[in-house]
Length: 142
Image (cartoon, rainbow, N blue to C red; front, top):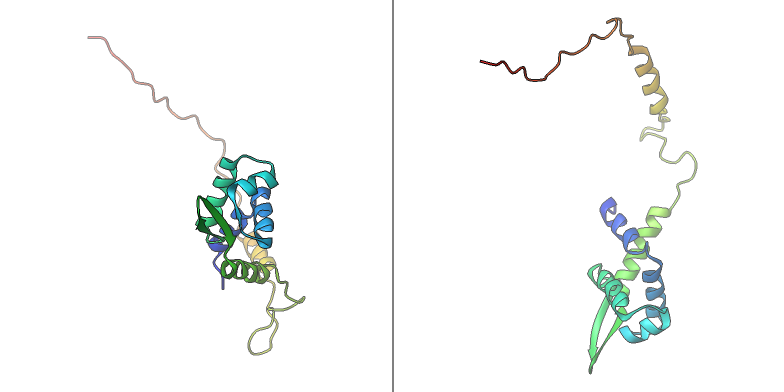
């Protein structure tokens, strides 16, 4: 089972459209910052910041080629993220998970709890609230 923290991290990294576009470009071929910048129409500094986040998340790896650093997708991480999101988005058939191991049907617990809470509520008969005493400091002259 995937932790909620890990799933939230994936969603956070992919929540910026520029990062998604970078991933789409890197799926085709490894690119340097200048090439990504030209294709995305944003500054090289902005591309670098997005690549740093993708690299910290393990989704992108860098490779030095002469003066330039080319970035490529980490296929292992990408397939892992795909599996995690697919498992999260899977839907169970209606009624799945409602039966107990011995075959009995599980009751709806929310409605049961609501009825129990409604029966235990008591009305307050304390009467009107009284004013609180003032907390100001009384200074006496000597």
